[in-house]
Length: 114
Length: 114
Image 1 (cartoon, rainbow over the protein chains, first blue to last red):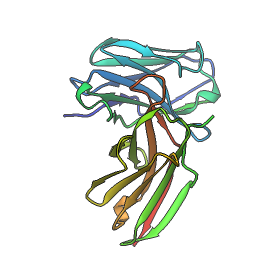
Image 2 (cartoon, rainbow over the protein chains, first blue to last red; image 1 turned 90 degrees about the vertical axis):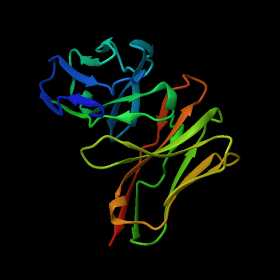
Image 3 (cartoon, rainbow over the protein chains, first blue to last red; image 1 turned 90 degrees about the horizontal axis):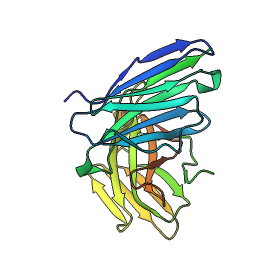
């Protein structure tokens, strides 16, 4: 299996621009998670989905962030407008219901907002 | 407020020796603990886990110990190998919120010297 796929791997944008990060989970996994990693705060959960439905978005920093999962094989995390403090590595992870303790991470998207 | 803490940002050991990585937590409602390993430019990969009802779990060279009364867990790697050099994250599941939410520590960079 291909594993969790994220695109783009790197994104450089200017403050105020819209940024869209994409994720394809492992086929058959029921859960999808979006994380953000920064030096200051470490790895933080932003939002997660179960069967395409958002379950917990308490980690989403503010209204500029939104996430969708239109189907079982695709999710997006959008930042609009982007700010320099959004610069971080964003990870997507998925998990099967049968092994719910284990999450399989993608390679991450490194975002730099200038 | 950090509920999962890894107080050592880095650790250096000699090849063949034991590596001990430590993790402390504050939330007594965590029911499952995991260790992830992360190489540069890759996402974290699951290493080993332990349920809160156990005090030890072993998988090859890796052993995780849990001391619930002290709210402390540790990962032992014996013998350490240069390929073990990576950032190790401690994570805890649950904590009174969503059952599938993982709370991560900030990580410990392990360097195994040949």
